[in-house]
Amino acid sequence: MIRNVKVDDMRYALDGNAGSDAIHRNPIYSYAVTRLIDDSGLTGVGFAFTLGEGNDLVCKAAQYYADKLKGRDIEDTMANFGNLFKELSNDQQFRWLGPHKGVVHLALASVTNACYDLWAKKRGVPLWKLLIDLSPEQIVATLDLSYLEDELTHKQALEIFKAQQPTAVLRQNILQSGYPGYDTSIGWFNYSDEKVRENCKIAIAEGFTAMKLKVGSEDPERDIRRAHIVREVAGDNVKVMLDANQQWNLPQAISICNKLKSINPYWIEEPTHPDDVLAHKTLVDAITPLKLALGEHVPNKIIFKNYLQTGATSFIQVDAVRVGGVSEFITVSLLCKKFGIPVVPHVGDMGQLHQHLVLFNHIAMGHEALFLEHIPHLQKHFVHPVRIHNGVYETPQKPGSSCDLLAINNN
Image (cartoon, rainbow, N blue to C red; front, side, top):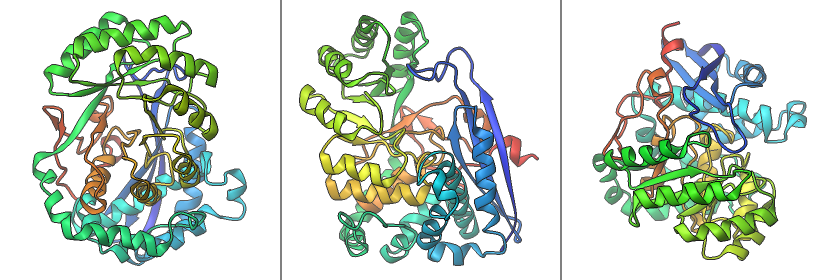
């Protein structure tokens, strides 16, 4: 039984312009951390990700949600978590502050993720193992499919999982081979051209076969020059992604994306405002065959549904520390499976939680094991940091979701 809850505001300054992009020039990577303390001595840890200011507001909202879990048994809670998630996300007063977005939804992510972590620890298994061992009925019971009925019913969700069961064992080979990663840290926005060049060489030496550059400069020629540096060093066989972090308006995006075709990018990420579904659809049509990726700032399953319905993106980057946590992440992954769109998460948690979720997506849902973003800057703060070797994530083996932080664990 959950006997106590604690919420902590954890902030980590980065060194040497790391984490910078076209919009967020001076980030402070931060977590709103929820701890659910079980009377058996276990602690479930979950968090949402921010860039510093406002992290305290997320913590205050997380405390509101977490207090509602006191006295609950985690197994009973997770047996029908979809209903609880729906109840919390539609709290009649808190909902006004969203709905299903912003501070309150980030707070719900923190609490939701703590529930899943505690559940896995209670069963003594890594989160990926807990999830792939659940029956389709048990998994779907953890999801809130409301407002998706036009595209994804309860019956259809069950059918997607059941259709993958006969071949799931074949996909478990990835547990031994590891999940491929891609390097985001080669080209933060504030890095010099020479640092970008050197980082590309390091990434290749470390075994990465895909990497990402931040674009969105006031002078588009800077973006084009730097993109060519990456392509020159990486060669033609490495996937190169470009990320504008919402910097451009639609006319700018059309113009600059067409110029960036010259380096054959694998995708253009977050080219314009994340709420503007129709602008992305217009852009897709104007820059074909270039493909778009998005999801870092898409707050909920409804907006993802709209992007999928309009065909406005080729890759979905749903983030379990941005949407309402693991439950909503799985829900969005189901939608993507129906529409045949790959899920390549944004890793606002530095890959800790998402390394579990992509294994589940691949094994239980049949998603392609494309690759998972790798950002190393906070690894030293985790009890069990992600391990990546030769560009590949090693499968985590410790019970839980790998989200325990050293500072809190020792507190």
